[in-house]
Structures are given as C-alpha cells and as structure tokens.
Image 1 (cartoon, one colour):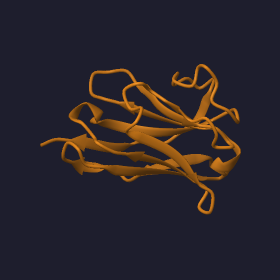
Image 2 (tube, one colour):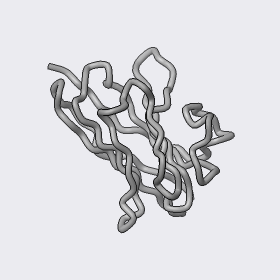
Image 3 (cartoon, one colour):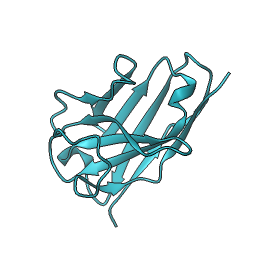
Image 4 (cartoon, one colour):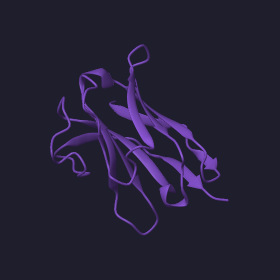
Length: 129
C-alpha cells in the first residue's frame, strides 16, 4: 500500500520553530515532487511549499516565504519542512503529498489528485501564547 506519513507537529509559542517530516512507504519520495499543504478550521486546504525531485527552485506561498524552508534528506528519503518564526495564523493541520510529477509546476498550490495522488493524514501545528 502506498502512503505518506507526516510527523513533527506540536504546540509552540509565537516566534518558535518546528520541523515537519514526510516519509513514504511502498515507494520512495526521492522520485517525485512533494508538496506541503495546510488546512485551518473553516478554511480550504492551501499550498505551503513544493520541492521538485532534484530539490532545485523550491516553491513557497507568500505567507511563509522567508520563514519556512523545504528540503530533502536523501539519506532517509524524507522531505522536511523547517518552520521558523511561527505565528498564530500558521495554526493548521499540515499535510504532505507526493506529486505525480517530478517538478513543481505552476499549479503546485492546487490540492488536486490530478497533481498529488498520495496524501498523508496530517500533523497538527498549533501556535499559541
């Protein structure tokens, strides 16, 4: 069975950091672009970041640019999302998803099965003072 699993969520105070990890079973993330998404209560799922198979030119939503960094751990075949200077508005369930493609195209923010065909169950991130 093909699946991805997120980990690393938690409760932090504003200004603190978290690092999320995305791992796969049944296949390797090394061969595909990977997207990170988040969904806050009452809101639609939104694209946060995307990293291509090669790791070059990662994509970020404007709301997280300069604070979040996506990367690959080749030794573990995982994808990481380093989140710094977290704010209450970052509170959401964070999901990773394996793309059908090797690169992050212009539609990378769209949480559609046409682009991302394997999704995790999500990990909760809560930022509160």
